[in-house]
Length: 210
Length: 99
Image 1 (spheres, rainbow over the protein chains, first blue to last red):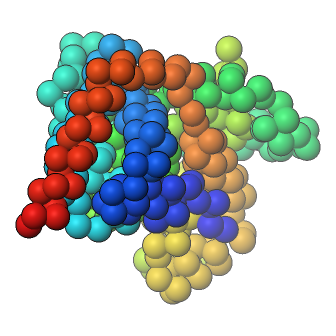
Image 2 (image 1 turned 45 degrees about the vertical axis):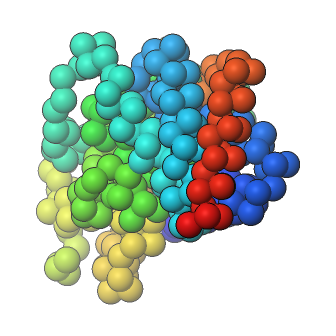
């Protein structure tokens, strides 16, 4: 019952572009820049919360990446390398006052209520796939709101693992955490996300559709 | 993870086995558990409607997260920034060749 994986870092086109850039192939420059700018912007957009900050961090990251491009030993690791740089810029930039104070999510508060099972079964009986019921834009908007509600420590792990498709080991390296801590934060972040999304996707959470 | 006889959710109370499973569902879905732990989870959920439903809803939300794309796009890089990036790349390549 494994989940379909997000685009894996190993198969990412940035790996091939980085390899070509290391060989001096100028035709890889623009696609690499556009892709990295987009990915870093998406990460910082959700971590910094301000468009200007996200734009600035994406540009600073790209500049640092190219200034140190001769130090990239293994193109397969380019995304982890880039995100580590982006994470550091993001930390410097983040306006913490915008966000809720850091807190730990306990497993207890994320447990499903047994009373929700009947409602959940009703949702299942509709026989509709979530994708058929929701417009993509609406789902994205709901996801964005749910992701922003996560405490920073969980949000960064969920973004890197489930949205960017990086591995547990890469995420641990980027965030300076042990792999066990990454797994724990990913699980709690996912549970909180599940609870926020349950009203939209079906399930036994508590949030109702808008 | 320990194995228990099965009589659960009596009077709406949470079964301790569900709590054990609950804590490891992400690792299960990510294929990060060993065969024995996977088997114990699968044996339990075969017969536990709340766990089956919880696993489904967790899986749905993870799959939804995989599809996320920011609704705002970054602005196009100004030409002077792009020139700076290209220059930095070319200088890095020169250093790499001379190293």
